[in-house]
Length: 246
Image (cartoon, rainbow, N blue to C red; front, side, top):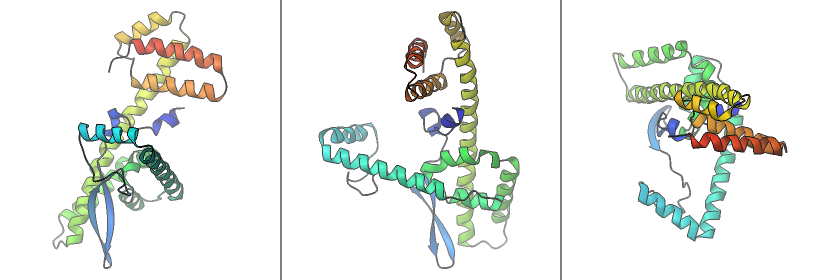
């Protein structure tokens, strides 16, 4: 259960922790150059030039609602992209050394960074960051710097920042999930659910993690055809939702 939620970091509370750029490598002669590019949602360009802002998002949503063909095409694109990312995840070899781990993350797409941080969290140790810092120091203070070395500094600095912020968000989420599991067990075993919820409100323990865990349990119960259990948990969720404030 916790493992399932551990990979779902794309919530509003954690998305800001991750860099919005992708570190892509472009081959030039025998060496590589780095470029940092924004990631788009429309790789085939069927929805026109990229737009940003609330009004642009609303117009995009209205267009999907009006145009059934565009909606179907967009959904197909999303499905194909999800399949592509799943296949890529399964094909990647887990790195054995710190040097390989650095290259592994440099070759990770921005959309996959959250997943890879969760998967590689045990390897992201103080020793790893010491190795990363050491390489950065060597490049920064090199007597003769090449353009490729300067590019390498830029990509390593971006990677370091993304990993540190991502780990902070991931660890916080994991702590919230563990606490949510304890609180959910407290609710399920309580003889007075309302009193228990009021006590949790005072301790600020009614949060998004608790609701997410309830949703996961409800979905799991329905998949297992445990209708009575699912209905009970839905009632509990309704009670929890009354006390939830963002």
